[in-house]
Length: 60
Image (cartoon, rainbow, N blue to C red; front, top):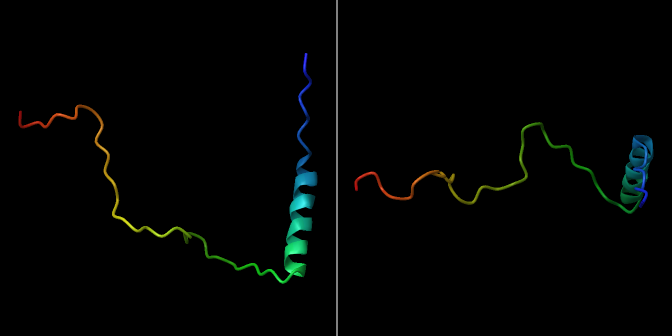
């Protein structure tokens, strides 16, 4: 029976992210604060409406 690899503890993951962030900033990277509710995605098209059910029109 194969043994599953145990996931690292959350503190290890947090420490890893902290280390990566510090290295990023040390190389001249910049972190911008974005206000809550702001999306980075641009909506280039209108909303799409999806109709479920029969594809035949009701006029038939």
